[in-house]
Length: 222
Image (cartoon, rainbow, N blue to C red; front, side, top):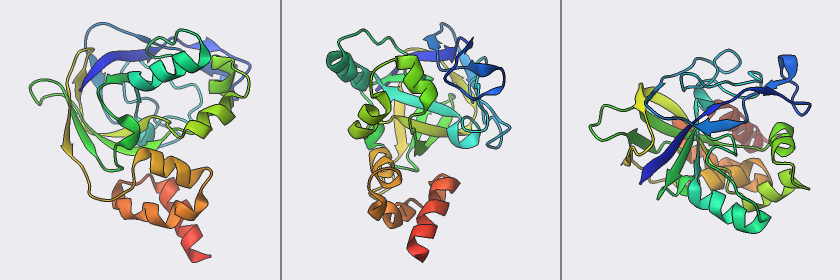
């Protein structure tokens, strides 16, 4: 299991975002050399967890619960076949393009150590990506949000527990895997098309994104 690429934003203006100045960081491209990773700060004020990356819309993206976005190369390959177009690493806006990591079956609270020596960052899986109109405008595929959601393979957001540096080629080691059922794809289904699953995501405990926990608690109170 390894990082195929580390991807940082090439900011540009887009009519498909409500961010100030219409800036978006959806266009992420592979970089060479090490990139520092650290906790960016609370949602709404903190941006990306990767130095040199850009988050255009801080109201809806970035912060500690969305510090790092990982997506599997295997999923990009699947979409290439379905869409009939080349999808380079970073095109889905992911910071880390992985190989050999079943990102969407990672469990909430699962911890990944990046790097050979154990000195790289320690990341914790905490949430999933819900597609937005910026993503849809960037991909420019008819019915993209509906199609992406139907796959329920969204990629994972991770928080930074310990800072460090990452670079392409670094190994990814799962150092802790919880024994509950709440994977990234399970959480995606619960928060989108299958709300009956919401009470079950509480099994993920404190690792669960606070907004997801709040939604699940409202469901159980009804």
